Image (tube, rainbow, N blue to C red; front, top):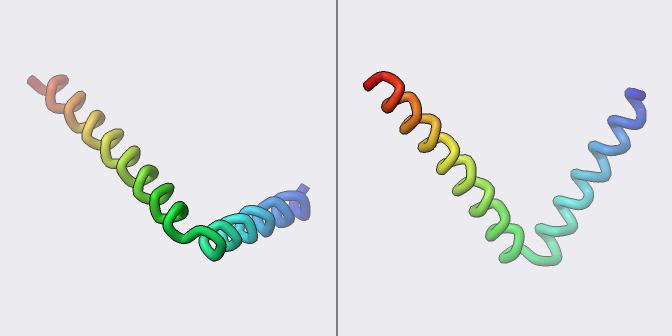
Length: 54
């Protein structure tokens, strides 16, 4: 099981590096979309907590 996890991790790393090397603009777009999603989720949690306190 541990070896399968290591192999999967290596495959993900290789895929990410391949994506960055072959299409850096697209990789940057995907990272930006990910961070925007995290930011909006955090903002939503903050809004929820603010409304909960009020």
